[in-house]
Image (cartoon, rainbow, N blue to C red; front, side):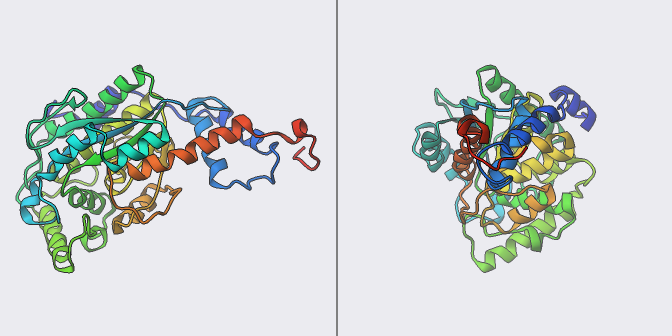
Length: 356
């Protein structure tokens, strides 16, 4: 597995089909027959058309939604880039599993399941609801060398894709990306810098709320990591191995795997978007399957969404991660579906002035 090429990774995950243009066009035409001025529901209409294209159904019903929270630790925390210690990662994983985190609360409200995956937590965890897929006990310090081997990076992506396929077999119709990993805004900023060519001074943010002094230090750590590792911008697996995180690789694989299974993916915040950037670099065909939930307060997130060409639905000044922004936006996904299913047409309502 260590020498896998991008092409081999793509082949293993499977073909990502183009969207169903006939279903998308049918949805667009139907929207114009509903009792409203054409296009007046804005992004809800664009979302309804996108969901029709993904599912192949003009009026999609997406009842089973899964939030997949990938958890991993980061050796770069040794450099003091986070306001919280690494011990918080496993503590929060148990909080997710016991239903007490913000993402659990918001997922219950939105009628979504939360699946928590240990893909790279530094300590051993056991829980009946944990998806135990640990590849290594935390990454190495990317400021001193590669975060992981190429083989581990490939395994993280393939693990994510396998989980997507597994959940689809269990009935999942839509995915939301979530993550937990103290220090993970640092590898995310590094991924954005390498794949976009932007300097770390532009891509680094405050993460969990670090001071001005710590932010300058974080930028220096990023510059050092990129200089030492020389990740290749034309090889996203190399970038992931050199500066990434296991949960970022897992989410990239989940995104690719969900798209290969024909399922839409709601992307959460900065870390999830960095994973989406890796996924689109592996296979650009994944892009039409992505739905941007919100733009977070992390400064690099807006840049990442611009790089991906995605327009976020919400701007809530959030910066928690976990999948919280993604789950919050599920109400808008439901709204787009319900507009298609429940709203009257000009003909059925006997209203004059509809499109002819």
